[in-house]
Amino acid sequence: MYVYGPVPSRRLGRSLGVSPIPSKTCSYSCVYCQLGRTTSLEAVRKSCFPKENILKEILQKVLSSEADFITFVGDGEPTLNADLGWLIRQTKKETRLPIAVITNGSLLFKKDVRDDLLSADVVLPTLDAGDQETFKRINRPHKNIDFDIMLQGQIDFRKEFSGKIWLEVMLVKGLNDSIEQLKRIKVAVDKIDPDRIYISVPIRPPAEKWAEIPAPESILEAQEILQGSTSLNMLESGEFGIEEFSDTKQAILEIGSRHPLRKSQAYEIEKRLSETGIVDSMISDGELFEMEYNNETYLMPSHLKHHKNR
Ligand code: SF4
Image (cartoon, rainbow, N blue to C red; front, side, top):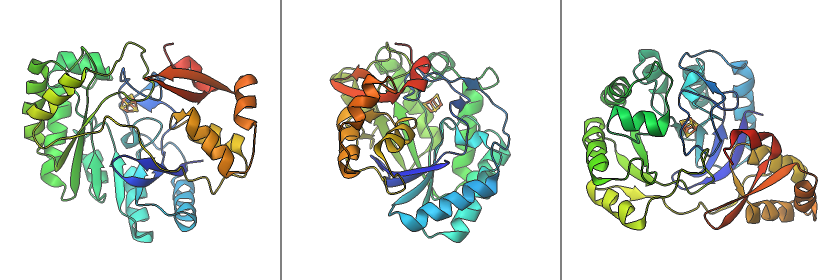
C-alpha cells in the first residue's frame, strides 16, 4: 500500500500521504526520526516500485476520501525515488488537490531533484543546523552529503521554484538549541528565504532515546531568533482516514508503521470500526509494543522494534 490516510497534519490539515520509498530508506538517519534508525542510507536515486501502480492507488484514494493535500512523504526520503517528478506531474494532471512534498532537502543540490519538485504547490524541507558539525550530529547524513552542498541546493531551489517553501527546523536539546547554534541556523535560513518557518521538537518517540525536547525557554529563544516562525510543539489532533480498512488490526498495523499512534488514537480507531478488545489483544499477543514518551503511551508494530534504540 503506497497511499495512506488522510492523516491529521499540523501543517497540512487532512493530508493524504503517499510513500514512494521502501521503509526507512533515507539519505539521513536523524536522531529524532519517529520511524527509527535508517536501515538503508542512500544518496542515489532509483525507481523503487512500478510508478503506474502508485499513481493508480493515488487516484483511487482521492476519489474515496476528503483531503486538503496530497503529500509525498514516504517512510524515508521521497526524493530518492527517481519517479517522483513523473508522479507529481501525473497526479497534478488528474486531480484538483494541491500537492505537497515533505523532504529533508538533502538532494536538492541535484538538478533532476529540483526539476522534479517544480510542479508541487508546497515543498516542506528541513534545516536543523547552521554548520557541518551540528549537521552531522543531528541528521547523520550519507557520507556524500555535506552541509554546504545541502544548503546550496536549498538556496538554488528557492530561486527556481515559484510555489511555497515551508521550512522546518527541528530542535533537539543540547544538539542545536544553543543561542550560538540558533544564530548560525538563522544565517542559513535567511539565505534560503522560505515563505514560512516552523519550529518543531521531537514530540513523538525518537530514534534515539537521548534525543530530547529542549527547555521551553530555548524554544522561545529560537522563536525570537528565527523571526516570524511558528512553533509546532503540540500534538496533532483530528481523525485518521480509515475508510479503506475493514478491521482494526489492519488499520492499526498500516497506520502505525508510518505514523506513531498514541494509545488513545488506536482505541478511537477501534471504536470507529465498531470493534472491541482488538488493541488490547494485539498488545498481549506481541503484535504491538508500547512505548512511553513525553507523558503519552504510543503503540508501534513489533517489526519496528529493532529500529528504536530503547
Ligand atoms: S526524520 Fe526524515 S530525514 Fe530524518 S531520518 Fe527520518 S525520514 Fe530521514
